[in-house]
Image (cartoon, rainbow, N blue to C red; front, side, top):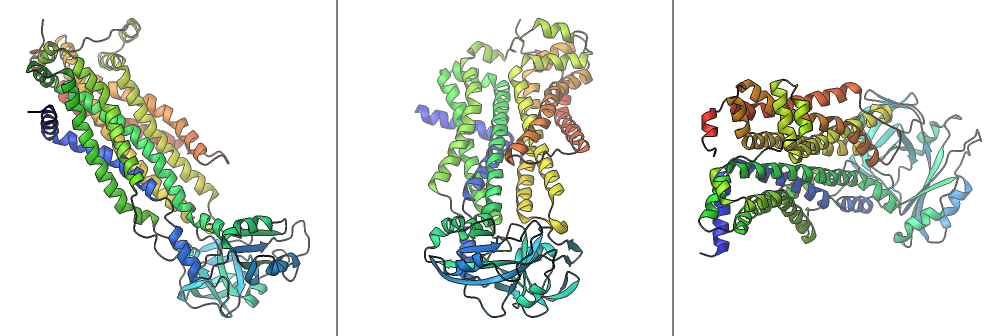
Length: 590
């Protein structure tokens, strides 16, 4: 029988023998790779919907708006000359407008937006079709005297439909329809409403005068950004269709950034989970490694069996992650209410598949390498005897812990004897708490800045939903990791705990000590995760006003984290504390 066949059979039988742990490992890797797949596949997901919307509405190549005069200067009663001059600028082949733009107050469906609050603008339009930028009506009809058409995203946020009434500066207008446009970012604020030109002009006041908007069609649409930059002045603000498209895609881009960041966090937890799982399995299967060596297996064969099993699990987990990501991408990349069309079927390029597979295999290889090497180097006699590893006794730890109560003494010494496990526990908890704190800071920051009228920015909602999903997955993986660590600690310390019980420690003291060995490093990680999460949030949002979650929410996060970890470690610790001492010590050698 060839070596490859032997390795394959031993690895697969080992995996099927431990079905529960194998499924958990597959789940851990699938979660990380599915998140990475989503982040990679979302790139450019809104390009098609914006292109469909632009084609259906004769979208402009450049939109130019005059700025309202500042410093108390009188506003013009008509469009300013420098705006009108752009109608015949070099490269312009068509235009519509200039249209009057008013900023009245609004009351609709329980929402109130004050004038100039930045929540929306009202554009005056003809009742006839425009050659450039004719919003497409999705429901109802186009503008008419005494009636208003609301942009689709803003209508959804206001909760209005055709037939409802809204108040603009105290005047009632019937909602005639809901429409979309490619001339205004649908996921950015302010929103936009359309009235007839006469109705829009009637809303102007000396305090809140009109501005004017002009839509331009160019001979070379690809040069729209250069044209917009060249004609933006103190009096005019110009935006190209590329800039508007980028704004419409910003929500998906932020979702992608959150998913990619979440992938790295999930990958770190996945490495910790698998490393602890492999270490626990090696403690449980030391005799199996000895038997393989006793019948002629080389150290390389032992290491290869363990690596092959986890690489196979990583491959299966990556396939599941790719499938889940492929199925979920259409849900996250669907166009918002302000766009029409479909982003098309999600595609997984060869590069995406290769990156996802490489990450999955890398996670398995990194987390398995050290335990596999240690198993390969273990002597055959020691493995067959299942002898315990001699504890590392540090005089400082012994001196400091000798005055502690028996349960805390056991916990402190178990933590000190496994510094790598200590670091894993600290890092795992710190990553999880930092993520939760960053999400809390995100919610706090966006609830403070808010949107006029108590509305919700669709970009914030989309990113918030992604952050919730990533956080839930991170918390689940952290819980699995804590359970793995407790289980591995119980297996690795069964001999020393049995000796402690033989010298008079009660099962309850042993149980408390094993739980303390997990809670103590987790407490350090939780405390470190609070400033890390706040700093991570401010780094991700590139500055701005300092925002921190409330003290109550931070305290609740810390307490909940430690309670969950204590609960997860209590069960395996309790089982270990009640195992007969003779059963554990019978494999000891003199």
